[in-house]
Length: 466
Image (tube, rainbow, N blue to C red; front, side, top):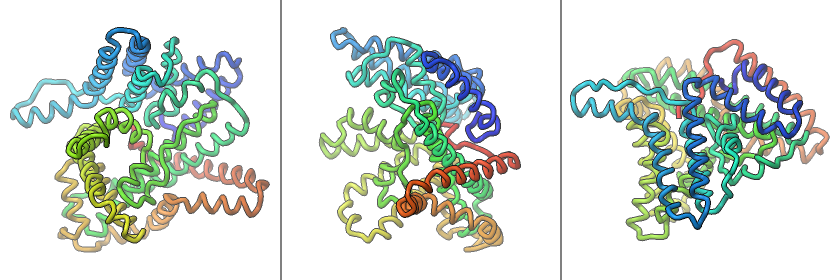
């Protein structure tokens, strides 16, 4: 069940909200946990036991590492990390390993294909952070397994993030506030995310899919760039829109989740991009991998090694394919280059810094989107003029003619321009205009999204496969 579906919008969510607020306050956590498990079971009935097993396992590990006087608590921590990574490895990387072994051995291995459980990367990382934070004494161990389950299985961010730290919500699990203003803010934020997803990401994704499916020999330079730009915008509004919806849903139930995006496409460098993109993942790897490896507090050679390890793991986290591994190392190498020549980059005009950063990011998304390294290389050759289809073809003209408005709107919406315009209008007209604008705008956005969903079957969520 996806957030941008008629089933969720008009059946699941209203029923859940009525049940949540109609029952006594003492029942709210129980209701929230049960509907979260139902939400996951609806899409992954075969893997609900896997998630429950992960919850039970990490609950026990949290108790075992909690007492600083306990002998062997570090060993329990290491075992918890091994078990979580093994769980992730079996379900996410077995097929990849078998496929490559078959190529090396030149034979077919009789190993059944393992389906990837929805959201396993997100809830596994959340579970690991809980145990690690308890071990570090950053959080008290949770004595009630249902509270650990609520933290890991909370449906707003269960299947596609953001990755919520236990330290962020541990107090909110027991003591969170429910106000009309917070609820209204949650609705507003949810509708913003829904609009990004349905009205922008879906339209852009249809164009990107059409062009990435074409053989590279049939792509003109213009067509390749249209495909790359549309996918660059699609993945932002798809994942950013989902994060907005997750944050909005959290507020409806009294939770405050941290932001996951901060206008990444206004970046001035690759480093700046990763400070703004998928911030919950970036900070997770920083706090739980990079710093424990030594971070910047070691010799230069070790710093390089630490950075490359982190980015190799970042690529692996996103998917089991050589394209994802290369994508991670690509960013690791770019960040090493920026570290070496950062002073030179800072002296460039802002427009050149931005142009460089967005070129690097767009090229990176080609590897992220492509089905293979060969496909990515062929697509890039077309982008840079090494294609027999020429500079511009009829396909490029037609797609640009039909989609220029949505591309322009997406580019504008990827900047703070619209937010700044709203803030200036609010400051000039006073707070009295805020409520009518939000109500009219929200209802209009919802109506447009419902019309689109009622007339289209194209409604993918990119990050569901991670």
